[in-house]
Image (cartoon, rainbow, N blue to C red; front, top):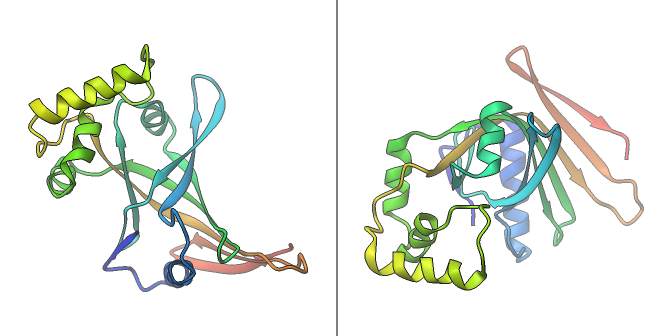
Length: 198
């Protein structure tokens, strides 16, 4: 589930929520899954991964991650990203381009304290994307953390990322292949509306 807070009343945001509600009614699984693509300056390559989109607050789309992960380092060096959602139950695809930044330490702590302690234990115990000798070691670290750690205290290496899109594309698939592609670009303090060929 994605939580909406004080959503800005601008057309692309309203269309996003409308599409979300349609997918929700259609019993879309993993509805919060969003693919985030980042660029590695070091390796000169693009990386993509799925994360869980948790909040849309005003203009900001927010997810959470380990700040020591490879994607976090890529965000620091190249703060422009592309985000992609596909809801197959409604055959809808939403593409966004945006700039990304960390959420505040206070925001992270407040959010972390409200989470399930088992999720927090995983966030504390895992050095995300770092090599490990076995899956059993990962499980052991998690079990130790679950028993011994302060599970309401947000570690400095975990927190949120927020991004504000400057580009939306709403793709609506049709059996005829005459797919509808509606675009909004933010230019000169306004949203420019248009369509793309299928």
